[in-house]
Length: 165
Image (tube, helix red, strand yellow):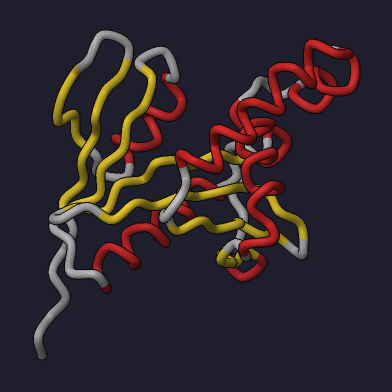
């Protein structure tokens, strides 16, 4: 079941929302029980989460961060890093209860539009080899394996140049 893009929007993350972005990135990358992990994990959940959120702030420094919003609810996060010839997708995560309905595809299309505006040659990202649903999604969107590492693939998608007309 897919969703209409009408209810979706991409909103830049404001500085005061960085903590929320980092926390959602952590929870969305975890299994579907990420929230339960924090609530029931007791001190261990907090011990894992707090350093991640703090380190994420350093990792995402000087990157463009976006919330993917569906009907006033944040359902995904996207972070982009500009490189010389490419735009690198450093994070794309969707809420576990909103997966497989087109939100990641919407985010990838947004990233492609940004890359095109910046006149980049390609989009790149890294994905774990064991994350087969994500690998299939990216390949279905035209990404190809650029490099194979021990546990991950570096995928690349060429950007179509806009018509000069």
